[in-house]
Length: 201
Image 1 (cartoon, one colour):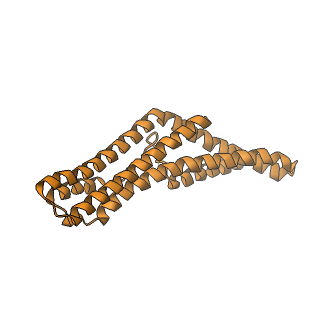
Image 2 (tube, helix red, strand yellow):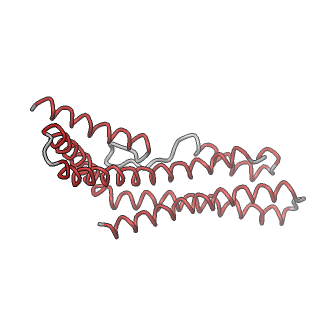
Image 3 (cartoon, helix red, strand yellow):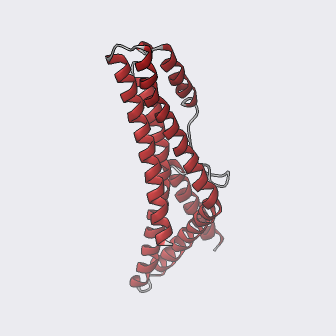
């Protein structure tokens, strides 16, 4: 499980890097177009940089959707298991602390709860990173002086600006989007289940 998780982290960091390269290429292509006098031959050459940037962006989105589709069921099941495990660890910690038994027994549930929270945080922060890097591309497009560029470049940038109106997120199981907000929601759900279990005892 550790190797698979590490490999997935590497793939998702690759996707973040692809988004970063795309934003750099957009910025670089527009700045070159602004700084230089453009002939028809140079206009074609300069627009290639922007075409490559759009292509890298499209490939990064495609790769992330492909990875998500392959591992979506696993991500969903792991999230459920971690929420249940976190809830049960909270119950066990509360039982040990309230009965004033051997407090050393609370160490194992505390470690398990910490590991669960850490795993949920890391997995959700990776989803947040992907969303942030994708949004950075559109911030770059908004920041550059696109209105000075030739019409052909403006049309390509307009296409990117329209795509930027909708956030790119990875939806897992149709129920949650990996983000820091989702991390807080999952931990809150665990605490809610914990309080329900305590109230029924």
